[in-house]
Length: 301
Image 1: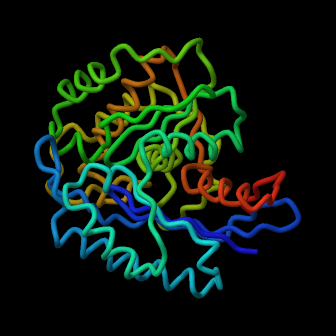
Image 2: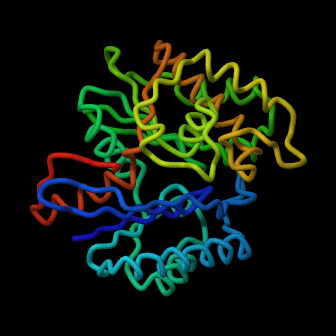
């Protein structure tokens, strides 16, 4: 039986298709297509722009057609949005447009729900005794076995606020995380588009050669992040030819790198493990559990 999850994120639409077979979840396909529905949103602006919404819906319609080709029934599809629609002043009108195209209900996850699903995806690979962070375009979720919290530290949001001012970015992350108590140090696991891009760049994997098996479980050191950040200190005015980085993500990658580097400093750890079992996987796992379908293994092959 096949299942799919679709994430309407602040920076991109992502989807995942898996097949459940005798206790094993087989990866079939996934995509991440940059649509930037939150274009222009920073501190005071909360309305999603019509052309950004239309651009997002155009991509969504193609994703829905792919799910149809896989023969995935509507009850086995989960469509959700995160920070992209949590904070938008015109979210209800946008939700209606999206649901009309998708043909199914869309959930708008709270920050806590998003953190929980991300945690569920990550610990399916790396165990429950972990600190899990998920850095997206609009927000940063941090979760432990005791619960999760969402922070307005997404790469698109911070780029809109601070551009390529590394010092301002770092100070904002530190101030936002101030007072957060995560208890004793645990294994740190990272998810999200920025983390995937970092892993791809570090392993010099061309974007078109992406496969989750190539980067899942990669250890990413704080020193690696500091070195990568030097490539993106100046504002991006034209596509940057860095192997592993989608050129359309180049303008926001510095904010994402700074956010993760500062988080590692805050956690007092020197590295983290990148996970490809993420929010999309956690969503499908919760869907399966709701049907009392148990699995023992995830396979990317």
